[in-house]
Image: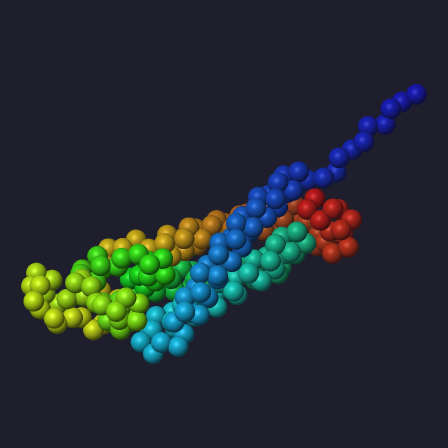
Length: 233
C-alpha cells in the first residue's frame, strides 16, 4: 500500500514577504496614532490663542497623519489581495504622502523650534528659564502666564539679567518665537524622520513585492479567497 505525500502548494517566500510588510505597516500605524494624539493635544491647548501661529502647521501635520492611516490600511489590503494594477498607483501616493509628512514636520520644527519643548516643560511645571534667557522670551505667550500662575515674573524674563534693579522684561512668549537660531533636536523631528524612514522602507518592500507578483504572474485574490486561505497565507 503506497503512502500519498501531501504537496504544499503555498508560496512561502511570498507569505514571508507579506508578513514583513504587515509588521512594518503596524509599526507605522502606531507611530501615526501616537503623533495624532500628540499634535491634537497641542492644537486643543492653543487653538484659542491669537498669537499661536504654529497652529496652522500643527493642523497640517495632524491632517496628513490622519490621512496616512487609511492609506496604510488600503495598502495592506492591496498587498494581500495581490492587486498588481492598483498597487502600482498606490505606491506613488504612499511615497508622495510620506515625503509631504516629513517636509511639514521639518518646516514646523525649523520655524518654531521652541514650541514643543516649551509646551512640554510648561505643562510639567518645569523651568523654561534656559530658553527665556537664550531666546529673549518670557512664558508661553508673555509675562501674564507667570502672573496668572505664580503672581511674579522670574529674573530669566528680564532684558538685562545682570542688573538686578532693571525691571524691563521681554514681552514676547517663547511659543511665539519663530525663525530663531536654535540647535534643539526636537522629539517631533526625530520621530518624524524615523517614521518617514519606516514608510520609505515600506515603499521599497511594496515595490519589491509588486515586481515579484508580476514575475510569478500572481492572480488577484478576492476577500472570500483571503478568508479561505486564512487571510495572511
